[in-house]
Amino acid sequence: MMERLEAIAADPAAQHPSVIAMQGEPPGRFRLRQGDWRAVFRIEDAEVVVDRIGHRREVYD
Image (cartoon, rainbow, N blue to C red; front, top):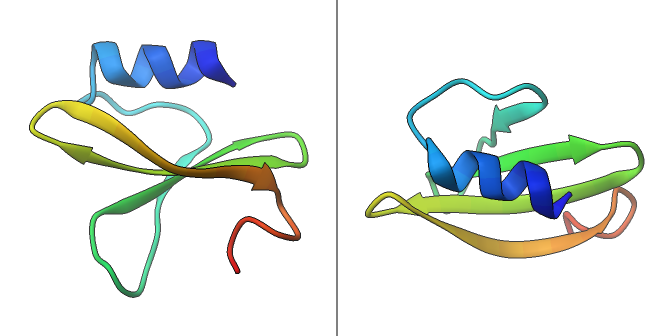
């Protein structure tokens, strides 16, 4: 998962596989899926800020 997040950080404007923009509040959040694990992050000033990493059952709570 860290390698994929580093690839996103290297080129945040590119389209990356398994990355989807999330709906709802707060705006500007994205989800990275890898198996049963999810990373919820946002991009601020060309920097990736990871909010949560966890199992898909728990990460959206």
